[in-house]
Image (cartoon, rainbow, N blue to C red; front, side):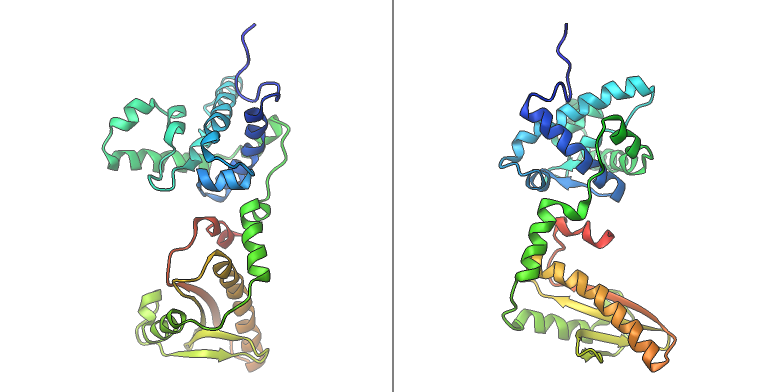
Length: 272
């Protein structure tokens, strides 16, 4: 009798990890996200991301079997896991098309294929059915190892005072509202203080909307940026409370302005 591929009997470590990985990938698919090999390895507590090849291969094999059973082609969900630099699924592309054929294509065509592949995964409506088929519970993205670690640093981190780059960026945003997609005619107020004594870095007021801007400089780490994301939630609520107090009926919006790049791990947070 031929040995069954995929999850098998769960006796192998890679099979156990494949069952651990699938709900995490489904959570990414439903959120319309990708995830890097390194991020997935950290969420699963794996010391070496290279070992994910067998893990993702097992998922791909199970999907081939399930596609035959359901008589429909399931999207290659393992292709959501991408290389951080190349932004490609690496070996995973082989579950969508021959990898040798893919590698011969011009970069622009590769990007088109990956975009269509990811869109197909994100748009698939039966991910919950897939998990039920394998007797798996959905994963909660906010409870991932990586995000919990960042949240703990954000919770217990201490501020060392305002840095020069933070002050410079705050002044720049106030004086250059077009840099964050706002009208150049707007006049911003720095360090606007609410009745709660909370201060937003910059506040723009118009006759139709208040726009609060939380600024994080280029030196801000993941924990500081996570704090900034949730500070934006707080500032929007404070603006709405202040408007009710002042009996001003206008809209409200909070913007997080970063001096650097938004870490991939935190892209999921802004969609919660």
